[in-house]
Length: 112
Length: 113
Image (cartoon, rainbow over all chains, first blue to last red; front, side, top):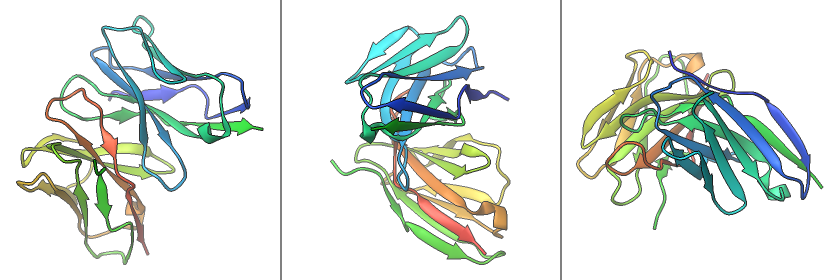
């Protein structure tokens, strides 16, 4: 079946540095992607989304890049802060309904 | 605006029992999806309900079922519980059409002993 995968299970960065979390997807028909942040004991929190007619979208301190040619997605966090420490998931929204296929997650650890 | 509310937050059940979990979506959202999260399998889609009808279904056995009420609140039921059903069950709320932001609740932590 379709799957979404992450390249790195754990990413450790220094406070103030930029973080880049990568994700590969396999469903070439997917037209919607979301990044979520999950802190311990909480549900996933929506960060940013992007549709397949875009290749870049920016939010507050976050940027999502989409490369449809190689089916790759990345989340960039600028000036990473201790509060950014969490597990980050990319999700493939497919192209019908609200069924999300999640990647395995990347744990981001921010060193003070 | 209130977020997605899931009850209860924690549950302990015995193998063989059945359990019902509840989810109240964000006001105005008519789509409710359910996910199972485990350390081994990650986040997996169970099913989605929209306007009281199941619109999508994941690859889970028939012991997992759900329903949605006219006020968009949803329940999921797991019958004949197995130890492997221990997981965090998450509910997500979305607007009508697909391909829109999905907002998650805090989840229900189910432990089967």
